[in-house]
Image (cartoon, rainbow, N blue to C red; front, side, top):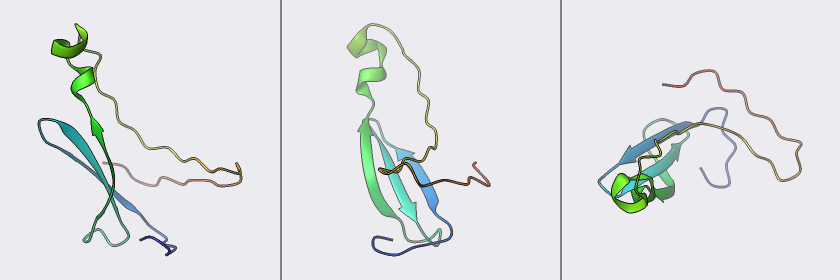
Length: 74
């Protein structure tokens, strides 16, 4: 998707025992990595209490002129 404008973006979040993996696709078939998040700092064993996990979708634009339109989230 890099360098292309798409009308739709498919976001996928998967996990294993150490990380959440964030990926994006323009067709819902071929995904590219966006990043990963280490969630061990959310656990009772590391910080002494469970903080909970909340993931969400938001949009940010450096010049504050962009927008996002979320039609569907599962």
